[in-house]
Image (cartoon, rainbow, N blue to C red; front, side, top):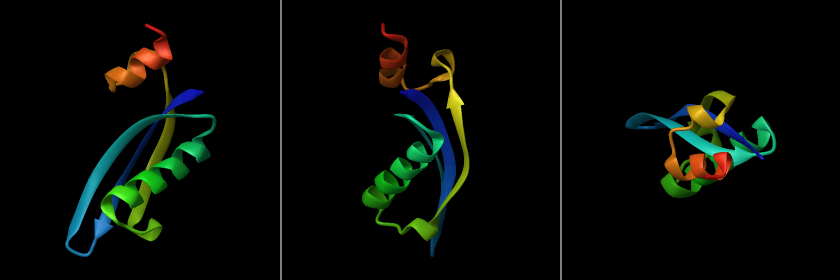
Length: 75
């Protein structure tokens, strides 16, 4: 499993907000699919309202989430 950082925006009729998610996945495509599923479920938005701007692999030192960092680095 690799760590990925997915950034994008949520566009609702009266609200537009950005997001950054860090998560573990096998491929970049799997990370994007998981973001679509989680954000759609939590915020009740459809996939066409979510715009992914980037999905990149990050190293253990670049991870901001402390729980994910411990999992990746094995501390």
